[in-house]
Length: 93
Image 1 (cartoon, rainbow, N blue to C red):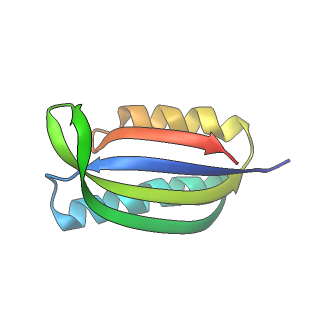
Image 2: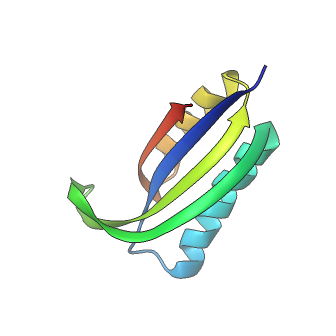
């Protein structure tokens, strides 16, 4: 049974444009392997409400997808070990 989810990740904005796009592509590909990516919205560079890992700005990305509930823990683990992602959240719709 697949559920609908959305995830917002904040990518380190100090990276080059190509590195940001590669990170987004890597996460999208991982989600595609375990489910279906419905949409990806790049909100761009925005100022953070408070410093995170000594960063004041981040590149925001919203991904809507559907997958099995077992995959969510794996996605969370991947986010935590990906240095380019400074903050993330995964929400079941």
